[in-house]
Length: 128
Image (cartoon, rainbow, N blue to C red; front, side, top):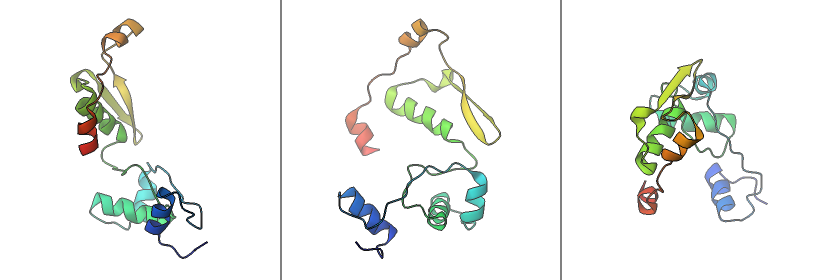
């Protein structure tokens, strides 16, 4: 086992089903205070997230934390782009640095069935 691999090296070995030498750490960080403390004040959001992850010892994540725009907004955007959901009928509530769906275009199971999303286009998702 090689304990001197870089984060990218550990990640690549794990993705190739090879022994990375140590357990690759992964998490989803959605916390403004952690971002501020460990993001080293970088102006670029991706760089700030990368610095935060490196400084707290994470090898991988599936999300870029944006303190100004909670993740739920992105979820509605993706639903609109790939599943044909009309975003005009959805609302996102925010408070206490978090977000949730506050309005939706259905109130019952029958109305939900009438608002089911379409299957996404595989090529569009792959290109994205």
